[in-house]
Structure formats: C-alpha cells, structure tokens
Length: 320
Image 1 (tube, helix red, strand yellow):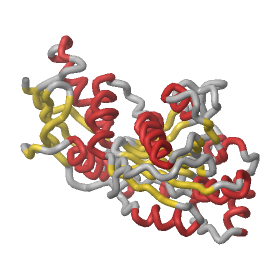
Image 2 (image 1 turned 135 degrees about the vertical axis):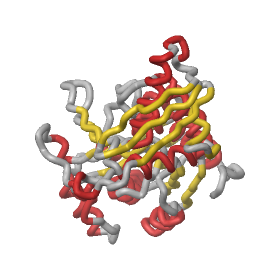
Image 3 (image 1 turned 180 degrees about the vertical axis):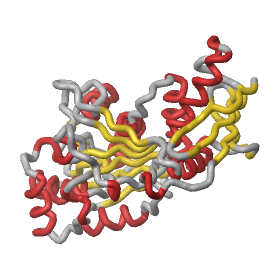
Image 4 (image 1 turned 120 degrees about the vertical axis):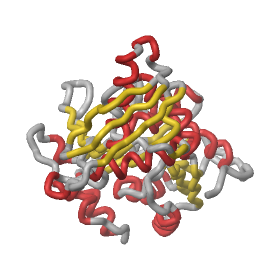
C-alpha cells in the first residue's frame, strides 16, 4: 500500500477526512463537499481489518473524493499501541480508542502533504473528550480546524440512509443498525441498538467470535511464550506480533472467547460491545505469569500453556 508522498500545492480548499468506508464516513465525503464547497481527500489506515482496503479506496473515489490515501501501518500500530496496551494489563481492550493516536498522526501527515489545515473525522465523541480526535489533533497542532460531520450534522440514522440513497452511496443492510471499528486488537460495535441497555446484540452481528451453537468441538492448546512483556511465539512457532494476534484471534474466536459488553456510564461513555479474542487470551496468560513472579509485570517473560474448551479458557502450566 502507498505511503504519504510528495506535498501538493498548498490550498485551504481541501478537507482531509479519516475514512473507514462505513456508511457514515461515506456519507461524510459527500456531505463535507456539499456543505463546505471543498474537495475531500480521504485517509484510510490498515490497522488489521483483515480486508482488501483497495475496495475502500475505490469506494471513496466513487463517492467523489479527490484523492484516497490507503496506508499499511499494521506493524507500527502493533509496536506503538498494542504492545504498550498489553503492558497496562487492562481487561477492557478499548479497541476504538487504541487506534485514535495513530489515525491522528497520519491525518496530520497527510494534511501537510495536501497543504491544508482542515481535518475531519467520523467520531461521535464530544469535542471536549480528552481521548477524542478533536483533543488529540489540537495537541498535535492547535492551528488545525477540525470538523466532525457525523457528530454535528444533525441527521438521524434514517436520514443518513436517505441521504446515501439519494446520492447513490451503497448502503449495506447492517449499516442502519451497527457501525464497527476493526483493528488487530479486535472489533468494537456502536449503533442505535446499544442505546438500550438491555438490548441483545444479534449473533449475526458478531464477526470474530462464534456463538454457542457453533463453538469448535475440539479443544485447542495454546503455548504462548513471552519476552519483555510481549508474546513472541505460539505453539513453538516464532511470530511477529501482527501474525500472532491474527492466529490467536482465529483460534480463540472459534471457541467463543472474547465477547465483551460494558454498560454505559452516565455522562462518561455509552454502552460498549467488543469482540477481542486475542487480548482476552493474552491478558489471562500475562496475569498467570505475573502471579508466579509479581515483580515481572509489565515485563513478563516465560511460557504459559492454556486450553480453550467450551467457551472457557484455562491455565494449564506456567514455565519461567
């Protein structure tokens, strides 16, 4: 995939948009161009979505983006965000928030290349949120003008779909109910259904974890070796962190591990539903190692044998 290239002629007639290819950021391309009478340039990062992002680039251009940058930053994301997150030992994976700093970094870089200070993102978080894009971008350069169309346009979910249909923007059936953020670290769901604290998320909505009826019938044994707080091999095979996360996700997800549902905290955050099979396994393994030698955390080392069976994860052996 491409890396940021040469600077183009400086102009303030361009908006650089963080683009995921979902319904809202697709509508945002057309909405920003219409509302501000400016060209829109999109930035899409490969953070481990597991899909061909050339389709996302084509979608952006088809909707009307002047240019569409697609950047493979998986290794950088693994080392700069995932590895430090492992060291924190937090059980809540925070899939969406973990990606924001690297998205911010490349938005700023592309804005410099495009010669503009006008940036946009698809988040609904308040501008005052210390972990939101507005705050992160202001910390990078307070001269940035930051637009948040999906938060500020005042369109209901039904109106977003109608807006898309009126402009020939494809709308998938699932788009009207859920939006997903997908990275190496897992998958986070948001959408109107989650406004109801008791609403059950349909099984078909999950993509990384199997439901009870589809759990793998054969137990899976996982030998995870750690060095300096980072997993370095799985079942005796040395792997990069990117490769290891992908392998763990497939194995643990087939056993239904890693479905998480965090209730809303009033005036702080909405309900959060995540699929994080790999973090679920890694955190449990690291806790097992640090329990043997507490001073190790967060620089754990050693090998943990775990068994995935019937939706449960069991520690079988710890070797230092």
